[in-house]
Amino acid sequence: MIIISAELAGEIIRYARKTSLLRSEHGLPYIFLSKRENFRASMINPSDFLVKLDALAEKYDLRDDDGETWHFTARQYRKTLAVTLIENGGTVEELAYLLGHLSYSTACQYYAEVRKKKLAEMNAGFFKHKFELLLSPEQLSQFNEEERHLLYVDFCLNTRRVEFGHCIKKLADGGCNSRGSLVNCVNCKNLCTGIKYLPYWKPLLQEQEKIVDELLRIYWQNGISGYHDFKEYRQEQNLLDGYRSIVAAIEREGS
Image (tube, rainbow, N blue to C red; front, side, top):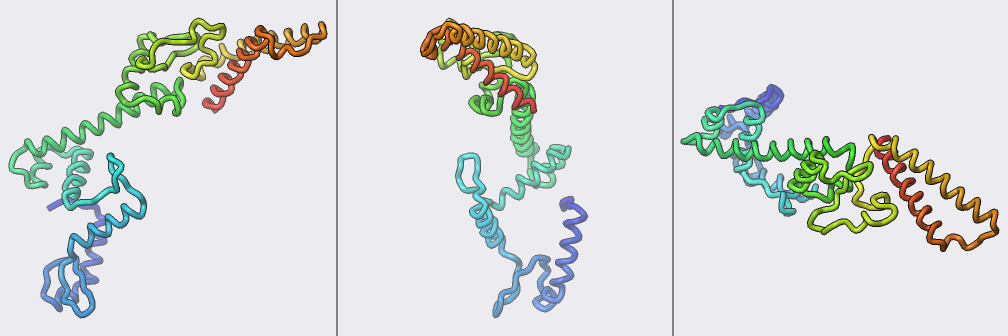
């Protein structure tokens, strides 16, 4: 005996009424019947049902954790029942009774597996929420679950703190190669910043625009051409491009 929804119960009742004459004609007690032409009616073969499910998995390209085409087995009925029961507050005793387990230890294994998956889902959601104001989805996708956990700890301890953000370079990739440069983190792909830093980035952008404009004014007043190759101009223009890129990215993420 299992608990089913009223909707499902109604469907079963309607089907039972529809096939009542067929059951009576062939003296069969089964609810779900199959009748092919020139063949005696019989109970629906579960293997036929599995074949249809596999065909649907093939049609819609459903895959398991290993990337293989998903294959349904009759045992997954039991697992679906177990997971649904646990997620709705069922006890170990109820699970053992409904699945016919002789001991509670087997039912506890289901609980452990479901709890592990739920914790993984909660962790993924937790870290996504904590990082969403700093990391873009593209940046976050570079880290697996364990790396995200360690990264979050580093963020909390401020061990990855840099000017106006955090550094997300993986420790396995070695030390930083940009800290000694003139622009430091501004043009670095590993810079992790966010909407809360926008009030700092905008004044920097505006100030840098003034610096580049002043350089251009001086070049123009002195009749200097070919300044695009000047080191001082390249440095200031690169810094300006970096500020523009950051402000644009932050505004895009915040919109």
